[in-house]
Image (cartoon, rainbow, N blue to C red; front, side):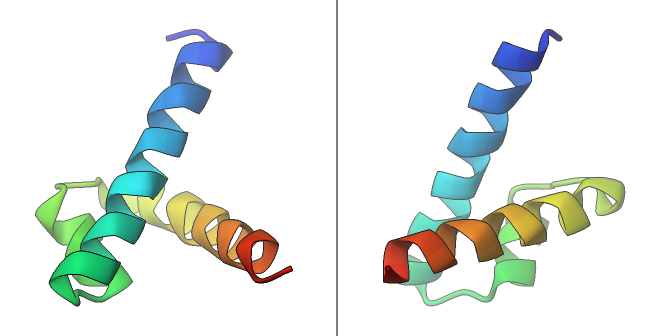
Amino acid sequence: MCNLSQGIVDRTTINYIISMMKNLNLSEEECMEALDIPQEHRELYHMMLQDKMEVSQV
């Protein structure tokens, strides 16, 4: 997958996680489990979520 495609997938996944956290009142880890995100990718998504949360608070 090219970098652009992977970036789109990553942003979409982050948006799914945030939506699930907000609407279903799930933890970040519960969302990643429900979305069947591989364990080796979860740290990357965790860091991306932190960055997105910091930007949205500004």
